[in-house]
Image 1 (cartoon, one colour):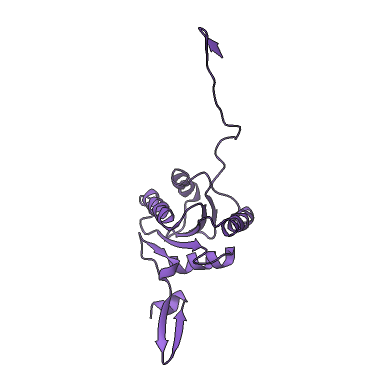
Image 2 (cartoon, rainbow, N blue to C red):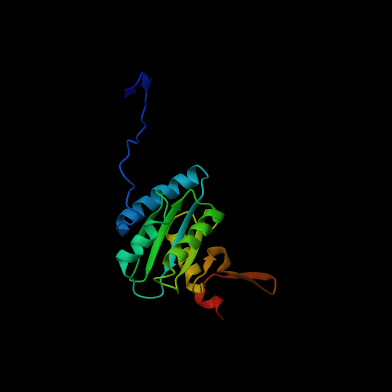
Length: 174
C-alpha cells in the first residue's frame, strides 16, 4: 500500500488462528509421539503434565480457563472426568513448572483442590507411556494446590548391600 509516496508493508501470518489446545485422545497420542521423537532426536525439552481437578469437571469452563494459559504449541486432552493431560513441547523443567503453576492459578476459582504432576523428557521417560505414567505417579502424591515432579515420586533404599527403588505412588505413602 502506498500512502503519500510512502510504501507501507503489512506482514501477516499465513497460519490461521491459534489451533485448539484441547484435542481427542487419539490426536493427543499421535502428537505426543511426534513431539517426543523430535525432542529425543534433537535434544529439545518437553514436559508432560497430568492435572487432577479433585472433583468432576465442568469441561467447557476448564477448557476456557486453560486456553488463556496454554501456549500455542501445548496440547491437552481429557483422560477422565476429573483429569487431563498436557504435552508441553520446548518446556524444560523451570518453564514447565511455571506453566503448571499458571494452570493451578487459572483453575483456583473453579477447582481449588487441583494439583499437577510433572514429567520431563528424557529424565522421566522417552515414550508416551512412561512419561504419562511418571506424570500420573507425581499427581497421585501431590497435595491440593501443588506441583510435584515425577523425580520426587521415588525413593532409593539401601537394604544390606543392595539398593531398592520404590517407584509406586501407593508405596511412597507408607
